[in-house]
Length: 406
Image (cartoon, rainbow, N blue to C red):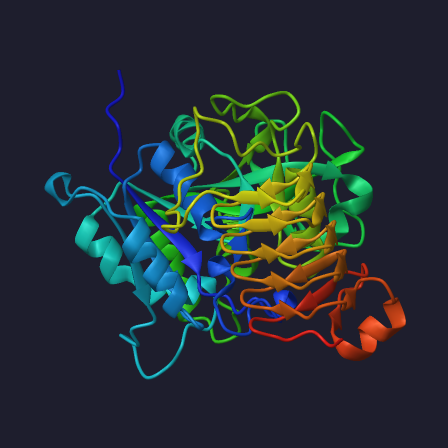
């Protein structure tokens, strides 16, 4: 029986998240609220902790205060057992500069690796909504003898040009790693599908350290994990692919098995929320065998008064719906839907107030937004574009603390 390797988890959480603006105007992308009570960072951390990987470093950089606070107050491990989840800001250990890419972020933080002395380093992104048992990927990595294993999800070949695409042989060895290619490679067992990189990697520690040192000395490199480190190791014949379709997470159903969403744009973020509120959700938050973990605010239960109602919606604690109607929506803690208001197909964040008789459709309202009595959002597209941020898919977005116009 093989002994279990010593594993260090590194979560990359330093990106600016420009495509999610204005939700990232005042916070790091992994700190953005999702699904009512969660933050995006909770999904990757839950996956790693459920897999019993309990020594985790979260590399942060931009607007990280709320993210740092969430990690330190929510993700507390047993220090008696030597476990931890810790945010690690850019420390400028190698000079007065920020991280220049995801690979550079790890290179500047190699002291974490040297201190922990792991056999395996698991490097995962912080921006995706999914369930994954990382233990199964690590086991596959050890069996293959690879220097690095890259997690990949099967996507239709016609859509693969949107992703980093992995061309691998029947033996799972990666032959090419191409960023958004015009003509993506098909799979050996299904030419109509391609492997898209999920941004999750398992490294032998010595392989990672050596690759980072070589990359740091390359002045022409963009110092990115997917764009620099993986192609380098592909050339060495040390990179293998892990098919996410083979990952069996306890408690999943046929409907939500293999679910993975990159919520890096406003439309993708919105659509992922709509996945949650279906009668039979595409992604099930209620899996007790593999829970998504977070801290919940100390608020009273949700309340519906004077005929207030919600159908096919997620309603968080502290919400009050007062003779208003909510359909196909996600209401975060402390939201108030007042008399006669109508909310449909929307994401409502913490402490939002939707006033009497107001209408909100196909919208994302960030924390502390106020919609005055009788105001309409998502009803008149041209007027919305003049007043607010509107995504390419037509979702109206109001930033943190914004007051809607009457």
